[in-house]
Length: 338
Ligand code: PLP
Ligand code: COI
Image (cartoon, rainbow, N blue to C red; front, side):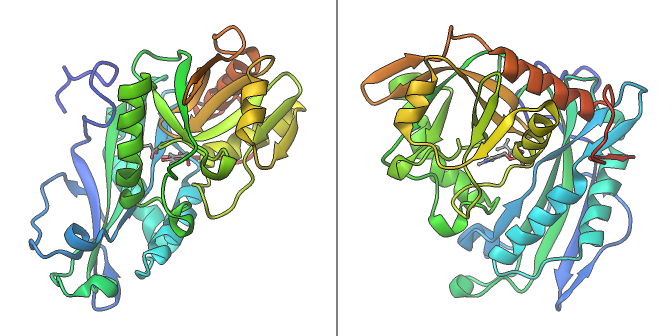
C-alpha cells in the first residue's frame, strides 16, 4: 500500500499491509517460522482441496488506533475461539489457540503502522485453507493446510458512512444450511450472494436480512437488533447463524447501560410493528453498528421511525467505538495492546 492510498476512499478490503504470517499444516503438525514475512502470492497446486471442496474458513477482527496513539486488537481471544470452532466444523485439525493468537499478533504488529486513525481501523483476516493436491478427497478433510493472517486498513464497510440502511427481508431462501450457519466459512458467503444481488437489483436494498421460517436471524455480513430507550432484542444463539463478537459486546454494553436485553426469536410481523416506534440496527466487525432506516418485504416498504439513526443505536455505537479506541475504560478486558 502506498501512502497515497486512502482507506476511506478505497473500497473496504482492497488495501493491504505489507506483511503476513503463515503456518503450514503437514503430517499432522502446524509449522510456524515464528515471525511475519513480507506479503507475497501463494503458489498452489491446481488440485488444492480448497479450490474444489471449499475447505476454507476465516475470521474478521480489528486493531484500533488508540487515543494515545498506540494500537490494540479488539476481542482477540473471542475470534481465536470462534476460528478454532470453524476449523473443527470443516473436520480439519485446529491449531492451538496460542499458535493462532501468535499469528494474529505477529502479522498485526508487523502491519501496525498501516492502522488509520478512528473511525478507520486495521482489519485482521485470519484464514484457513486446505492445500492437499487431491481431487479425490471430496469426502475427506485436506491432509495439508495453510493458516495465515493478512491485514487491511479500512474505513467504512457501507459506503457513505453512518447512514440509515435499507434492508430486504428474505423469508424464502435461507442464508446457508442449518448445520453451517455458525461457521465463518467462505462457502456461506457465496450461498448468500445470489439472494443478496437479487434484492439489490429488485428492491435497491443495501443488505438482505435472512428470515426463512419467519425467523429473523442475520444479514450476509452482520447480526440484527431491535432496540428502544429501554430494551435491546436480538435472536438467541443456535447453530443457524454466526455468533457475532460485536453482538456479544453490544449485549454486554446494553446490560452496563441498564437496558433490558432479550435474546429470543423475532417474527417478521414483530419487526414490522417495531418500526412504528422503535429502532433497528446491524452489527458486525466490518459493519460496526449500522442503523436501519427502511425495511422491505415482497410488496411492502416500511420506514423505521423517522427513517434516521435512532438515539439508542447511536449511544450504543459510541459506547462501543469509545471502548475500541481507548476513549472509554476497557472494563471487560476486551483490548490486547500491541
Ligand atoms: N453474521 C455474519 C454472516 C457475518 O459475516 C458477520 C461478520 O463477521 C457477523 C454476523 C457479525 O460477526 P462479528 O460481530 O463477529 O464480526
Ligand atoms: C466481518 O465483519 O468481519 C465480516 O466478516 C464481514 C465481511 C464479509 C467483510
